[in-house]
Length: 118
Image (cartoon, rainbow, N blue to C red; front, side):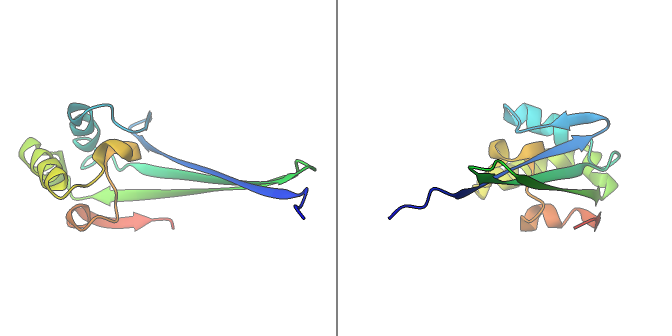
C-alpha cells in the first residue's frame, strides 16, 4: 500500500561576493574571475532548505549564511591560477560548485584563515 503523504526536500546554495551572486562558473576563466576576489572580498555561502508536506503544502525552511575569510595571497594571479590548476589536476568539480570552490577540499583549506557561521 502506498502512502498518499510525502515530504519533499529541496535545497540550494549560492555564493555572494562583493555584492554579486556567484553561481556555478561557466568556464575555467570565470572561476578565475570569481576566486581572485576572495582574498580581498570574503565570500559568503548562502544555503537554504525547504521541507514541504504533501498534500497539505505546509512548508518549513531554513537559511544558513557563512563568511569565508581567505588569505590575501589568494588575490594574487599566480596563486589563484595555481590553485585552480591543482584542483583540476585532482579532479575537483570546479564548474559544478557555486563560486568555483569547495571549501572542504584540502587544497582550498590551505588558503582559509577562518569561517564565521556554520
